[in-house]
Length: 392
Image 1 (cartoon, helix red, strand yellow):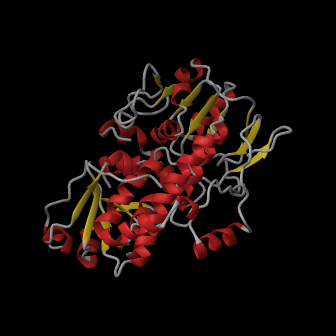
Image 2: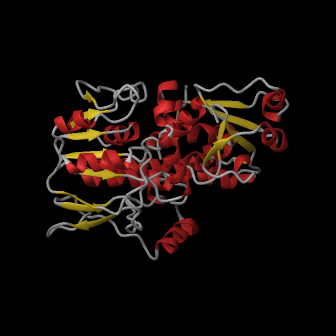
């Protein structure tokens, strides 16, 4: 795998925030391109049997956070209990999806520092926020400390050492884990909303996201068939355990990389391309499908069935991933999606489902799963990779 590929693998986990967090009361109050489409939620959250399955997996019906008061304590991916004493007025978003979450819930006016690169350029009115990234896209910790933030959101590819440095300087940091599903995306925005005191807008954003995902999932269930699909970006693909895998499957496709036994993000061999012969090839809009014999011989290329999705939306595990999700669902099952849009309403999705506190990870790694280990390996190559190609 070359340096460019390693960087792009890293991009997909940049700002990945896992939703399996536990909130507790810290005081008397209980914690409570050209894609188009509506925003909506996790494929696993919905009506009927799917909702029951979610409850069963979580050990019972999910509780609803009734309030948005402070102080609030939440356990992050390192097992640290992070307490936010008061509504934060000065927030720093270290990675692109941290920023996306804050913009989606209307908290951008309190952001004083963020990743001000091309990967957040789609966010309107970044104003005079300070860029907290170095040229190699690592975090400028001195810059962050100098901003005197009340809260720092640190997505999964923020190194544990960076988190330690900021905490040693007295900064409150919430470190997120790797996002592996759409369900986590919906819960993540609720997590951010609770931490910054914007619970209601976060609930609305998560509900809209859940609605879009549920409609795509229902359309897929009603469709006659599931086309074989391959996700490709710069010599790399994605198998199980990633939010992009969940996008493909929820939209009604069959991820052939997962069928080939691939987990997480991995190099793609042309042997797999030939063997699996995908009906469709899906890619971010800044990646080009290779013109090799292996790719040219696929059903996807022969029949012109390739889809380029807006890169920042599909790569960043935030609620805007619902846009490429909806586009895929409409591409593969247009009639079924139209029917689902008519039949699935907000009352059919479950709002603000809380989750149990995750098992604490060791302080030496950023993730909870094997996919998290991949992210850690990617970070190990960051010094070389980030100088090769800037992305996410």
